[in-house]
Length: 109
Length: 109
DNA sequence: TTTATATATTGCAATATTACGATTAATAAG
DNA sequence: CTTATTAATCGTAATATTGCAATATATAAA
Image (tube, rainbow over all chains, first blue to last red; front, side):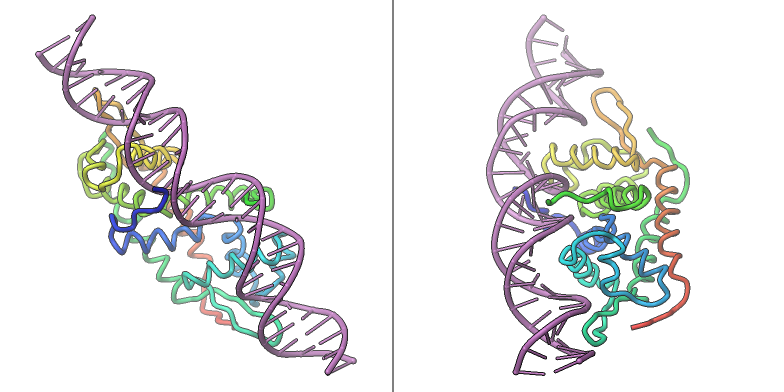
């Protein structure tokens, strides 16, 4: 008890959920938005920008990397992060596929 | 410690996260997909369909209702659930707004 | 009214998530 | 080599989520 019953669902559903979870925390959204607006890539400015502890930011970055929505390159002593273009479009598509599955108003209840 | 620092983020970010969280569990995705494919609306077929306990399904339905993505109408002794059309399109828009904010390939790292 | 059916709520238990300080690792600068 | 600087990892505490059994509620049927 207490553990998500992944065995009951399709691989697609489990995968989607895992990816969607990334958008389910404001800090990660803030990180993504910062990456979107800043032309250049970031590393630890996020700590200053967001006001969370360095370790907390690092953890969120790790989760974002885990689902491959961002990538980081080591540049000297710091790390430069940016959106992973391919994955970004893949996610866009996947969400659109879901949202487009509701075609016409069929208000039944 | 251990509590999401909502105070650090915008209302929009917090709101988006709360809504996105709904898509972050396969059971809720399965419920939504079942609602999408079944022409008619559902109530407790979900229990049979998904294989989760009735109380668990009920809880997920509650969360879906909390963010207004579904609505339920009492029909006799059972409840008929369906997608909330307006909210559905609103979510579609909100996610598209985010995804569209990555305009051109600017791979910087 | 009694009984059956359907759903919501309550009360746990197990696990996951969030956050932070402290420490570690790795490179750059002196 | 020593010292900053930056980011990752570890350990821990607080809280949230997930799931189920048991119970409560509410309507329908007899």
